[in-house]
Length: 385
Image (cartoon, rainbow, N blue to C red):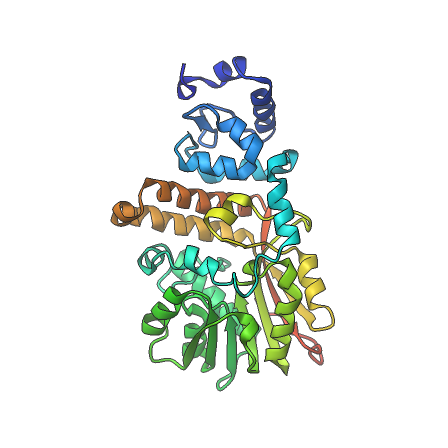
């Protein structure tokens, strides 16, 4: 009998000891193998469980890409999985090399800096334009008073401008500027001049020609370590996740070097709850090569003696809503891209968006905005929300 035709009870009765182990683990997360709830995992082929046991999320993700298993609500499957903290119960030996590689090697050298641009950000501007908001903002929206993606992204951009107390005539450095959504918004609404650093040729070309056309905005295709000018303000949105633990201090030293003594630096980054964990091997291979999420202690250690933390704001739950909005846009637009990208890419992208949504929903990962100053603001920093 094929795995896909087995009921939950049939599967459990015929399972091996390792399969029973996984089934019992999943039960702790209220997930059933071949169950009838939308978040239950449905097996379409043999070997899925063994592959996940041996290779962790890399095996689970690749078998999903191959169509070997499904869940009607993939985001809810991952929410249940992450909320129960099940990934920590399995530590596959074969992932040891990945763990050592991430800890011992500097995977984010200047030579490697352009890898993620070529693999992820240069996939195609048309695809991202269909998935994102009209400003092409590829970071978490701020849903405090918003009920749609476009408003949530504009609210986030305006929140950053107000946190930085931008004034006309200021020069702002955007490290990891993407397609220029923040720079365009800040130039339009706050009268500042912006310089953006990116490692994506596609982003720079699109941003120059469409998002920031006619505005006092400059794109520089360069690694952040090569910047030497000084600015009134610095912003970095979704870039620190690509820096890597061996470069955190260097990154902060570059920011301190480029920021005027009375300036402010806003760092917006996804982060993890536990310091000693390795990057997710599936995300590393298929989505963000050489990426790594920092822990709070990584950031505070890197900033020590260089910056004073004026404010720290966590709105990670908003990333769940943002990712689900991106997924809805992606699904609606997919018929236009199916022939060019293919079924395996479709399943890869669904896995990326919905697994991340589930992880943020479970509060397994966070979204932090730091406001940093070099010497501390006299009289204190006035928080905005």
